[in-house]
Image 1 (cartoon, helix red, strand yellow):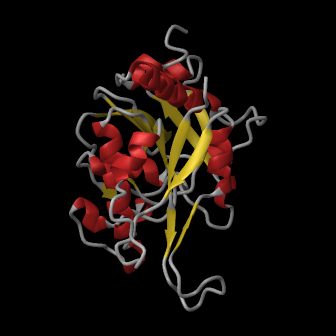
Image 2 (cartoon, rainbow, N blue to C red; image 1 turned 60 degrees about the vertical axis):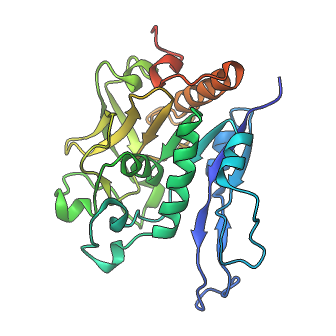
Length: 275
């Protein structure tokens, strides 16, 4: 059987005269760890570029739908804040203005994957994007809007910042990790789910402050997101939650959709559902 083709949304950089590398150009890129993590499932990974109408070489007959038609699933990778305007708010701080261009690009991509019933998995920003795409909102800054009994972001330590997370009993994650009530994960975010999007279900919460750490869609196709970065964690570290069951569940859903042509929800594509 030919390997699955998994799309990964692009991170975006814009022209910046202070940048030594291509200061006048927009740059789209794929972070190496997420590509390696996806490909560890023995699949092909493809970055899905944003199609800029500002380019004189804009492809007049290629659309997001053409990419979705060709791919078996989508991973929304992490990156810049989601712009508050995307969920109907104004930035409380200019530093939290986010990236509306990327928001629009990823939401259009996400909506086409959902329309076709093809699986989507979101990482960090990607999980927040799923929530916003389904009409939810975000805390623009956990420390000032929620209070911070847990340090959710430390730039000095970056991916080496960790905290505890409680898996919701009886949910999708509890089936993936049947003997894990409390887990340890990395954390690199200052924004988080505020109001939950339509038909989304909370799957995990940070401990002890209750910030949402994982969501899934209760709709007809596989859509799930986690706030942590499984691609940054060493699978040989027994103290951290192993990201392989997450990847396996997502790819199982992709294979099912490809084989049958029919979407199936998250809970029908859980390898450990009978554990």
